[in-house]
Length: 317
Image (cartoon, rainbow, N blue to C red):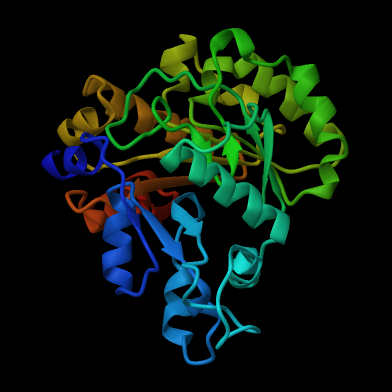
């Protein structure tokens, strides 16, 4: 718990300007919710090592800069640098992360707002595109209050604003309108920073539409859906939810309760939810966050041997 609180509890944010450190250091800085900033040196011919580090920088923690009048990017290297050349830094980031230049602009502009307060936060996104999956921002509410979650103070992700008051939560019709043809996407994911089963009726209605129109569905959940809805909702997932991703977070009930700030009884309820869901959907995945104090292999054993579903490790930044 001390490690998690040191990462999230201080509110301190730092920008590591013109980054040229190690990957291990960069990963630690991101865990502390700091920002990694790149300049024209990522375009230099002999900067393969730096570009390899850039591949591993989470987009929620990336910023770009010119460092004018120095660090002039290719194709103007050797000349005096100027702010307009920042587009070449952005192009290099776009190429490495397989994004459009517009994506990089949206993401880094929001990151600059988050750090410096420059500009304005974008309007809340009810749906948001990551790679070729469309995510449904169901709610910002949650019955848990995970120590590593930033939904309250920093509800932003890859250039999108996912912060949403209860009064702003859309109807199923709004989501359906924004989805359009679900076959355009690899899958429709019910997610956001909150717990989607809090609005299970809306999720169910949208999922029915997606499946009726040839799409695929996934729901990311903490596995407390039956507690929240005071009934077993897993039979209702049959034929409308293809994949369930459940946050296990720890193999140990006490640590689980501390991490998620819920009662220890939620641990067994969550595992039972996974067992029930396994009978109703095509695939169940259970995951842990890569925090230093979480014992990965003991968690894997619970998931694979005890429950019999797929195990995944989620990188914590």
